[in-house]
Image 1: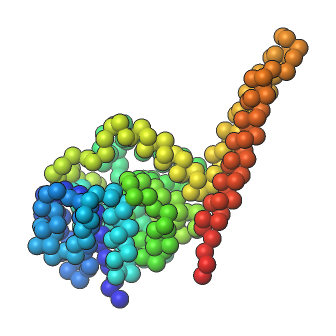
Image 2 (image 1 turned 135 degrees about the horizontal axis):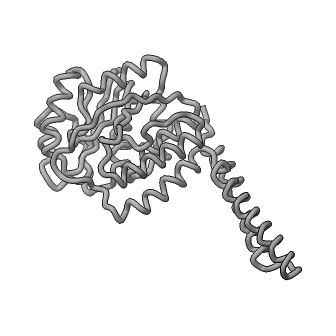
Length: 285
């Protein structure tokens, strides 16, 4: 079996591939290199083929996560390495991930520092994700959204059905590994300036993405850890409001009833979500 497969999702990354692919081939001549062309309108596919990569093309853009899934299904390697095609990730850093895998980990993630974030707002959002995910899992998570990672192929393919077609595949895969007790490690890596087109993520979409990732973090690991505190907050607000209205007006108000009801409903949603999460990770070996 092929030992190593390197998968690069690419959408209009012709210029980045001109630097990335030669470096990869020089560093790993025996590796399988797969470029998943996500509906590019430039010369991404032809340049990738000219530079010796195995090219998988979609007739239209399906999203970064969809490209990752397609590449993971086609890969023959026992170890999968995922990296960007825009020149941010370097071939020379792959060995650091592989060396950590040899220590017994099932996934190793290249963790960026603050200088590796696209902008200040993105950096603040990612810092929040890291803290929330660390709280949920009980493990120190240095970079939840990094797309530079290496994983054992059999472990990674277990969660293909969970991965979204959009940009949050790193979040989903990381939380899935932690939830399934597959060890994850982080290796600090520098990130270069991207080549070619600017980021495909737009500021307006980042707000929605921010909220979706927060809920994804919770629902992929332990929903009750998020829903229970929210339910308790509503309960104590309702209790405090009831104490105030009872002391002042000597009555139980509709607002107090609404807050108590919200607390019960939120807690029950969390409880049901917890059971659904357990079923999601149930394996039929």
